[in-house]
Image 1 (cartoon, rainbow, N blue to C red):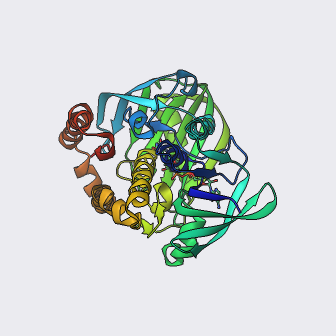
Image 2: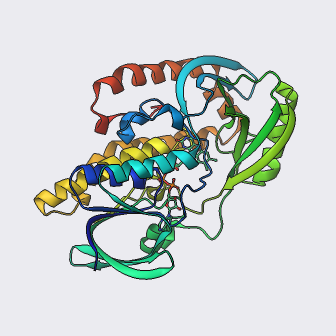
Length: 375
Ligand SMILES: Cc1cc2nc3c(=O)[nH]c(=O)nc-3n(C[C@H](O)[C@H](O)[C@H](O)COP(=O)(O)OP(=O)(O)OC[C@H]3O[C@@H](n4cnc5c(N)ncnc54)[C@H](O)[C@@H]3O)c2cc1C
């Protein structure tokens, strides 16, 4: 039977980064992805520059979109507009994740796509894991298990079925638009905070190579809401053309964070780290995977469970996520609250805080201790 030190389940951001860093620490590592790669992942593919530190590699230009994003336009419920500058990374998840899979391989991990984790059980202090590899069932042994299997997480479902609802509470949808972009600027990320177009976070518009992405998230009737948002963008910015594709993502997972137990560590979306206040999740996926790899190495040396370390390393991130969940829920309770939180003064304060943390605080901190942005 094949034996590994680390088995990373899921070839997205968390799995690839975790496998890469575990392999770099000389842990015998297997990374599995159930789909054939490159695989689609519904995501806007926007991150802050510190993401390169978090994934532990400089992203080659070939993996980034032709148009850079370096400006932000925030629109408040009262149509107050605030413009700012902010350098961002803009990439398509499909080729990007494939590149990240290969980065893990380059570091020494074994990578297998079309390989699905079917089940696992405890075996001594590690696990016996049942896989479907290219249509054939097999079992492998591993000392440590990295849960990086995304928002639907079969691992978390097995351990914590109570964290999943019977049906999703909404969905995030991206429309892919081609045509005359009117007054839209190709280097700007537009963040529109209007409850009628999204009742849980901002709605967005930005360019990715030849496509414009127009997206939103809503609890009730997400597709209808997204189409209403599209009409608003048509009117507001004078765009003319057609929608060439629509992609959505709905999760039934509860908001709470679950980090795993003993030698099984949960990371990224599977751990519940998507933060609607920050509007991003890839950086949390990368940082949690980085800290999981560090915990596996520590556990290997001490013989103690990896969770002993991971819980400690993740404390600040979990605290930030819980705080943000509370703020986000509260400000989306009513238009009045949302307006107040997005007043020009508050938006400027938040902008300055973001600048300070990205340009000063995170430059001084080691990568493992970086503060997730916006703070
Ligand atoms: C519409 C939308 C827009 C977003 N925009 C942004 C953005 O601009 N910036 C940002 O930072 N975040 C964004 N996010 C969030 C971001 O996509 C996630 O936070 C991120 O993908 C989490 O990475 P992950 O590695 O945890 O999970 P994933 O990227 O979902 O990867 C999990 C992988 O596990 C695989 N898998 C699942 N089960 C198994 C199994 N049994 N065996 C083997 N493999 C398995 C899946 O196929 C998948 O490839 C967005 C999300 C949505 C829905």
